[in-house]
Image (tube, rainbow, N blue to C red; front, top):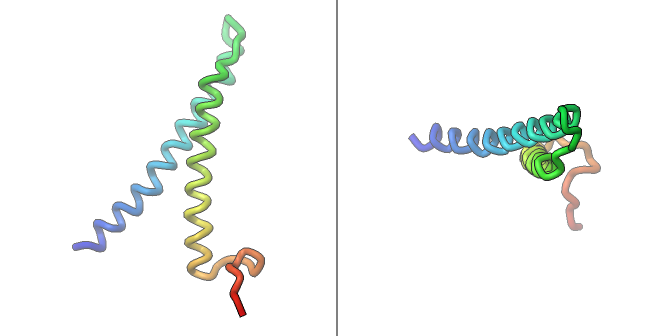
Length: 85
């Protein structure tokens, strides 16, 4: 009973940052294309908030993948943890 619940929690831990990154990307896109509207001003606040959300989401998913691959020994030798002799 515990295993499916833990897998569901793990999927949620990846879906939430993915949705955050998606919202950030769409926010940046909307702010960029708003300058071509009638007033011609860029929405810098919306753009910067979107950039921050996008970078946080991508960094979380990238870090998750990196540490999972390090644990399973899928990385190139230069990314592997250094061992003490």
